[in-house]
Image 1 (cartoon, one colour):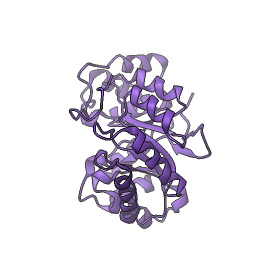
Image 2 (cartoon, helix red, strand yellow):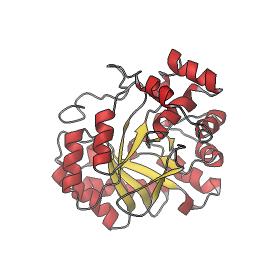
Image 3 (spheres, one colour):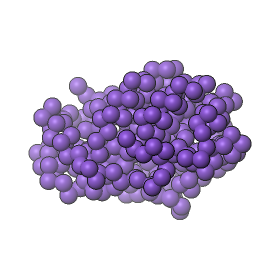
Image 4 (cartoon, helix red, strand yellow):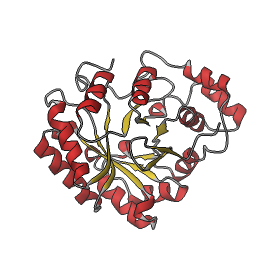
Length: 279
């Protein structure tokens, strides 16, 4: 079966485009033209974060593109330093000011904090939705116990979990937990920050398919109903990474790629950031 163009939220109306454009590694002086190139290529989900320093450029790029605001699904995040209720609200307002927008489509907690309990943070996240500043809310980089607790205590329904996921990182258990809670799984670092490009299995499949390694890795995620958010500053690669809707990997190819998981596959692994560790 072909992957859908978008993944419906099961908890409320709205749909998340299944391939998004990430801006995390473009921290700092990102040109709005990069966002324009992504929107021109067909992306309608743009992912940013307060921590990245790319929100202003993302907002400028959205306006410069000419694509109507209502056609763009925008994600941003509140960083772990700002998860106390007062700080959280100020961070959301700062994001909206930088973006020059009235609302965020998906607001995420960027990382959990070992110092601030979820009982303080989840009501603050819910309040941003209740005030109309965010249409949907979710979390990022939560392990399964934290995810279970967040879903249980949040006054508003969560719709998404964002976490690292690519063929070198086994996320079978976390993906199952997201599905148990009916959350969309958004995959950052879907190309392993370039680590996948020399992989012989991926290269063999790409060659046989007449595709790039990036397209194969993205398609592998899509066929699991996972929404990858690749990034690039190269307009041609931006377009190529979106050109993944006209082919399908076989069951054998899916299994061969899944077998590439490795113990050292994680790319994003800040020490002490996730209370209780990843597992």
